[in-house]
Length: 51
Length: 464
Image 1 (tube, rainbow over the protein chains, first blue to last red):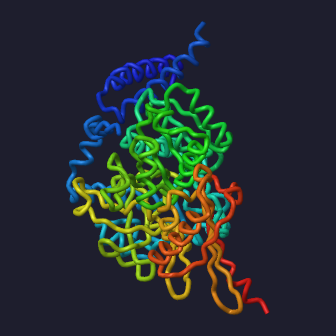
Image 2 (tube, each protein chain N blue to C red; image 1 turned 180 degrees about the horizontal axis):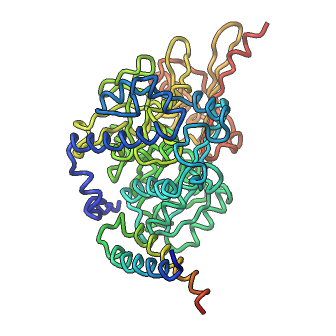
Image 3 (tube, chains in turn red, blue; image 1 turned 90 degrees about the vertical axis):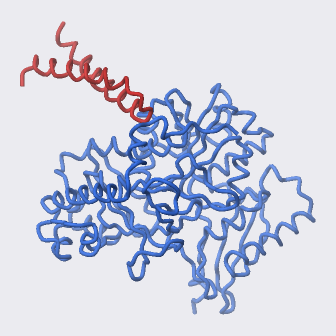
């Protein structure tokens, strides 16, 4: 898999996680926020190599 | 007292689980057991040998009944032997070695040795979830401040689960256990500007409450935002639980958990630990674990209301799963039909014991939890310890009690009456007369998290 492909997949995953965190299930909300933050962190830590 | 928000109203997942019928739950369990056995047959020499010995050829399971009849049980001794032959995880790991990212070890208090469990990335999330689930039901929510009085980190399930749980619920944790004195914990709690949830062992909640009262602090006044107390690990009397709720002004909930369960396997939900003057129940999380409650001698299921040994199968653990593992934990069985809604069996609150803790005293089966209940039904008592010994060929039992610090003003007459009352309560619960005497509270300063209250020194009395 290319680096660009990894970036694209992570962006798609973040978009999906953006929707999950809107859940009305309070038991799942924090877990989705955790998942969203993991994906966001992976995107952020890869950004340093793009500049 | 503040009413808890209904956890089922707040979670569609919980509502779906609650609404399943028993047949659907068992179908789910069977599906998970089939996947577990198929995987372990392929990946674990330990479990493959057991399945072959029981007649589960190829790891195929066609019904839960067949699984229970054919799959041999395991126990701590078997796990330790497996670990010794294939260190560190034995051949029961069930996943590739490089999938292990976390380990959990048992505490070793049995003296037999420590079991080691290798956990995967998914297991670590489940470890957090299996702590978060009962705490969510007990009212812990995003934005809350949670005090965790159990020592965090290290190599135990109870060390890592709380941190993962509070994080994935979106609450703010203060892991004060093991690194602050009780007084320092109180000082910190007073500075936080609102505390909403507290997790502690039964014994430590008692110690903390006693220390607050000794400083003239009324918990419900000092922490008016507190809406949930959650305990695990030790038994207690109903009278104690009621007093705790009165002091703190909020509900007390209980969970049953262990390393083998990768977290909690049962809790009171939001129902509290008592119903009137009766003990409450903990509903088993049967969609995550199969829990059989069996006669430890015959391995037949116990009848409703009877005490049996909990035998556990993990349904959602990847690394080092337990399959029909004999926990040695003793619980009173409450069948789902008598538990009030939802298809989940239950166990009685406040009385979980260990079969290997049972003491045979003058022909009576006595569990420490029975004496705990008798002693701590007296709110004046801060701590106690028991010793069984032999003198001139006779079994003697000594119970040393210490009056709580906030009760230091008791007069001599009241103290004498207290000793008499405790002695009678112990006799009533155990059928054994024990000698009860008072000692200074400072004698028990070492009792902090998991109380070890009993010493059996009878064999030393038999030396020639």
